[in-house]
Length: 150
Image (cartoon, rainbow, N blue to C red; front, top):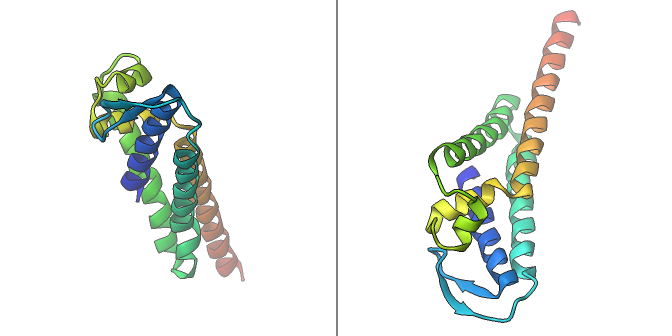
């Protein structure tokens, strides 16, 4: 889920950046056409929809599962997303990351990861999943202490 969400945010963010500049990009982030600059409504709506889908999959969908499974799902999303960000910052060199995506120096998935690593919606999902893990752990701890004391 984390890899799919991160790649989708990156791809859609790159496409939105291009739409604002009046460019048409292929999946390798290479300019293949020119169009009038526009507001990227579809791309931004798709990012919001993807964020809602990821939030549902991490937080709400597993609500009928046992608590350890819910903690595993939310913490694995958090860990995988953080690992992708660390990989991006440590291994993908491109100088100015946004310029590298825009000029085609980082083709395909590398450009998507770089753009996603700078996207606030991904950072918001990280904070949300970290808070979710914390809340789940606190509830588990409180439930265990109430069973021991009662």
